[in-house]
Structures are given as structure tokens and as C-alpha cells.
Length: 175
Ligand code: CTP
Ligand code: MG
Image (cartoon, rainbow, N blue to C red; front, side, top):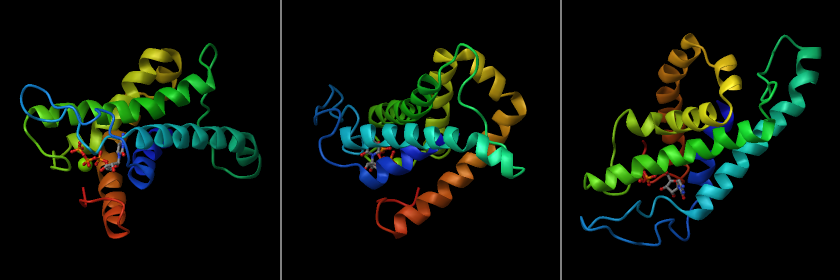
């Protein structure tokens, strides 16, 4: 899940500048996505997620040679490393954008809290993109127990990192 987690944090650290919706408003009077979704956050986030995955791949063999730690591989038969990593990283931020679109439709302002959805949007986005692009790899790596574990651990991890992000000043809200 790391290549799906990292884009979110890196978007918060490096995001800003031109919003993806270009400031446009829909008929309901609300922004399409809002100022919290920017091109810089999207591109830097995806790049960091893919790079982290490549680093994991580079460490894969040496780690298992010298330690008991085994990392998952991001390649499997017909599925290609770069496609899998791009799906995990971009799916994460597209899930997050999809959520923002609906938050705005419900009249929720940027940063308004939507419990559980805010903590799981990127997991569902990453899984959807990865399942669609690399179904064999997805089914090899995510069985039911792993998915349930991810759904329980992620909100806790997300809240912890966001509280840290809030105190170091990269997040406007601690959620
Ligand atoms: N961010 C960004 N571009 C993205 C995603 C996130 O620049 N594609 C940055 C923004 O600075 C954003 C911060 O990361 O404020 C935290 O992201 P998030 O909590 O998802 O956004 P919110 O500001 O809470 O906006 P929303 O209500 O739409 O979720
Ligand atoms: Mg938020």
C-alpha cells in the first residue's frame, strides 16, 4: 500500500498553485473540486508514489537475502511494475478527487471533515485502478484478510500522519 499512501502525504507537503478545476463553479454554486486539489499535488504525489515503489523493488532482493523482511513484488507475470505502481499512485489521488467532487456537491467546503470517507477514499481509488489495470497481480496480493487489515489500519495511520502534518504546518486541519 505504500505507493498508494505516499501520494497523499506528498500532495499535502508539495501541493498548491493552480487548482485542477481552474476555479470553476457548477450550477449548484459550488466549486467542481475546490482549491485543495491542485496539479502540483497530483503530479508530485504520483511521482513520489511511483518512485517509492521502484525503490522497494530495488531493495526487494537484497533485503530478503540479508534479513527476514520480505517485501511484496510489484510485478507478476503479465502485469508490469510501472503499470502497477502508476495505478496504485494515481488511483489514490483520483479516489481523493472523486471524494472532493461529491463533498462539494453536498455543499461541504474545502477541508470539511467526512469521517471514514476522508480516510479511505485513496485506498478504494488505488484498489479500483489497480484491479482494472492489473487484475492478476491484484488478486495475488490482496486477499480478504489483507484487505480487511488495510481497511482497519489505514484510518488509524491516516489520522496519525495528519495530526503530524497539522502540527508541522502542511495540513490546515488535523484530519
Ligand atoms: N493537495 C493538492 N492536490 C491534490 C491533493 C491534495 O494540492 N490533488 C494538497 C492540498 O493542499 C490539500 C492538502 O493536500 O489542502 C490535503 O489534502 P486533502 O485533505 O485531500 O484536501 P482538503 O483540503 O481537505 O480538501 P477536500 O475538502 O476537497 O478534501
Ligand atoms: Mg481533507
